[in-house]
Length: 283
Image: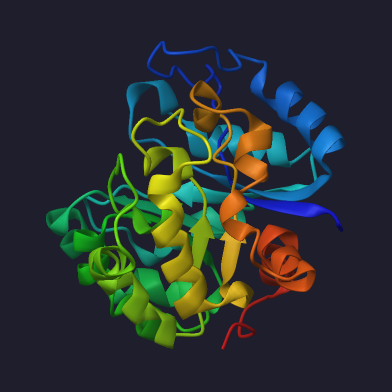
């Protein structure tokens, strides 16, 4: 297989605190740990998702830009909090700092509606920059965000963790999975919408139950509707390491039915294609 490309990675100045369930790299150790993983797993590029929605993550946007300035394999998205009304000037500052896009988190309908109503000028600046928009949103929030791909057609919207359907101890039926993901699956009609096959441990109950059968029907639904050309693998380093190994994040049984070529699209080529595009090239 060619070089992998990881569509969902986090780095924090103080390290990811986790929930004290198992060790994760500590402060100052995350980058070194991932560098070792890059060598052993053959990871080329990585999309670093900014997050500042907790006290431990304060200043994360600036921190990941500092890291990326010395590492050409890092491509960063800046966290923009759902509350508030980000301006066009805020967008310009994000791109001037070197971020290739933004990351948004919407846990419920209210957060989704708030982001939906952000000023048009902000989205216009994102669109002109061909921004990558990493989206952590539940199906309820996705319902509110459904108009954004048309508002910003030059942006690439990457919906993380299979659209956050919730946790399942037993794999639901295909129909139940499709019904749960219906707001996300409807977005497959937009060529600038993508799904990250990431965070499978967060869909399964328990989260250590690799190969995470509870996530399987959701992976199947996303691959069916978006196709292998618009699904991207992400490790969710370092939060995932609290529950599973990097190898378990990488070697997903749910992708075994794909051809070699289709698997390579998901595991690396799709993200590299997005990273190579510039403004006006995502239509």
